[in-house]
View 1 (cartoon, rainbow, N blue to C red):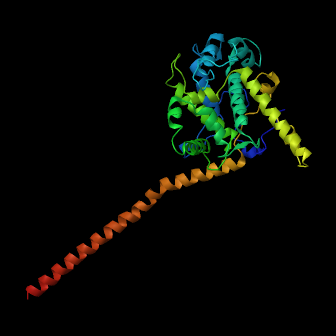
View 2: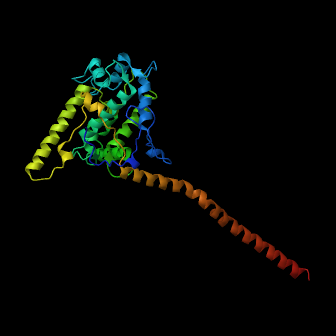
View 3: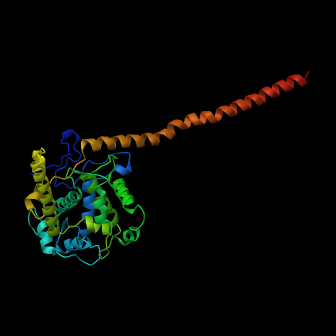
Length: 329
């Protein structure tokens, strides 16, 4: 069983995603009343899947999977066509077709694989391996993802790094918790993929940031996971030697390896924590109050505008009556 992230709270009543992993039904993860907080993970992944399911049979064959893999080929900073160590389509099919090995990738397999790829990328940026990304860890995000031609031009500008770090925090951290969870990280990239692929045509190059973050190459993800776990293993050993208490969860640190079928079969999709749900609910209430405030204040404003007019009219009438009585005598 994969170790849950240490910041997750497993409370059934507050579970954000209640559908089984193989379901294609949309999960209940939206918050009503605020567009910024809405993300339906299952529905979004299904839309991405359908872009490449050209014949609409509910699975990706070798040709369709090849189009997906080609679209998300990991870029290089020098913008060469393909980096070294690129797996062929047979290896990608073998890794993604982990449930039944029937030579096709089903939606459920596609979903798990995509989430596992993003989870590995998140773990790469999470230097402290505490399950969240902070503003300081955004430095690694910027250095890894921001190498488009526009970024290369802007890199020499003053405060480029700080501005980019803040931009990513704003995009990721939708509940204003000053940190980014795996769920928020995943949600950002899924929404970006969905938005870009709506207008995408085969052969077009996807934005650098997406190709760098969504590396579907199983061999490269495997090497990344091995590196991350070795770094954490050394950190734990060093902490133990220094007499620091290491919890069983920290000692059993593990990142899902997309080349390991058992890892994918037991992969647990990220969920919103209780704290995240609470903050999102509060933000939704605040936005609802802002929308409702003008409607409630409108009658008072109307009264405030009518009152002076009534007083002026009454004064005019009073003056008229007074003048009539005086000059009619």
